[in-house]
Image (cartoon, rainbow, N blue to C red):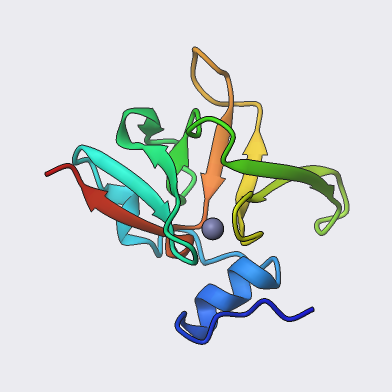
Length: 123
Ligand SMILES: [Zn+2]
């Protein structure tokens, strides 16, 4: 089943629907520190608040928490070991992986491809 969205770029479709990964450090959102929300670039659902964003040093936008009930997860072995992949519950687009090295209170790191997100500043 091809879920690709013709309104997205080739790179966005590659990451969101073929489990690709953008190059680290390539996203402008790494440096985004304003108040607002991060939406799914495919379906526009709100996924993260800027309150849960932090600088992980990984080269990808990182969050210690998503908004409630916006993602489904599955385990993938694309790198030869198990990782927790997460994708938008609403449209199935892949966003990134969850790691256990995040800051408190959750200890989680949502490592999100920046091109899968659209930031909307709080007005
Ligand atoms: Zn979505």
